[in-house]
Image (cartoon, rainbow, N blue to C red; front, side, top):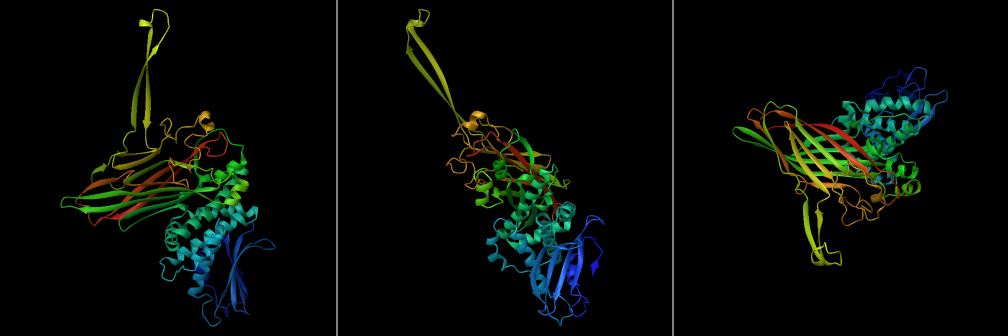
Length: 498
């Protein structure tokens, strides 16, 4: 029995399946994706085993002979129940979806111990989370398992569905339920699949724009604003690059990474008699570039684990969307300018030059300039009522901003250049893993807005826009290739003024 094809509400459909005694057949199906009436569709099948009694969910391509793409675990059912599936069975099915999404990731073996602690019994919006997990699993199945004539059309349909407001809100709930460790593994599974999909499209000279709602979310709670974002490096826009690299092994290493970023502010609302202050303190700005494949594969097909991009600039713009009640905005100081030390060097030399030199002596003077600076510089500025925060990485040799410059060929050949062995040097501007962490005590302090007395009791909206630049200059690999990529994101955060 087949249901007419449109993108279904999977939770409602599964919850309303007829009981084992009501069903006239042992199998029921629903179309979950179809690109056209002339093309095969993807169907979800529910098959009952009356001897066990149990049932299995499966996804198949509906050709004349169906091609199975995925099967769930077997779930026991109660023959006497009026419903085919009980609530605990539907929760187990959700866990099955999550487990199989994680199996597509680079570290699937590490996830089993954490999955057993997942509890969905009291979860709000369970239905939306269930549909999101199924949709995400279907997305990965299409990339890795679906036949070519089905894959392209279904992937575009699922991608657009995932970018909607409801799945985006559900992703925030699911990430909270998974916890940080499983959240990172979940996103690595998705971004590894997207990387493979983009490379497949590039091989056929097609392109795809990765929708940012899939990879970022924001929350405001308990005095904390937090934005968490994930993006495969290959999906970031190329800002500048040298001649296209023909080194396939280097490209493999650069492509199979993702950016993981966390932006955290602590906020405090101070209500005075005649005005209200909102103070926003920088807590943590963290950016990491994480491998999407294991170390063995990176060494076999790439040029090792030491060749990857590094953060070269981070820019944030914080704007209250309703500005009629704002009196002022203030920012704290930027980083100090670099110290420049000048040494004068004078020498007197004997000379047997002709008599036009004074007393046969030649006086020479020299000047030596030493530049003392930190690799990262922080700047704050104000545009209207927007606060703009910038972190710039500077070349320690000439002081230029790295994101907007290119290394010279002499620097690329110099084994002692600052960007060589950049993850093991004592003077490295990154963590040993290649990321950066900025805290308010050293790189940025606070921003505060002053409002009139009419705002208490209101819910105010802030727009947070951000740009992150990643740059590649060679580390240990011998190449002249270099490039800079950029990610842009936008999030809305709501704040109750009380």
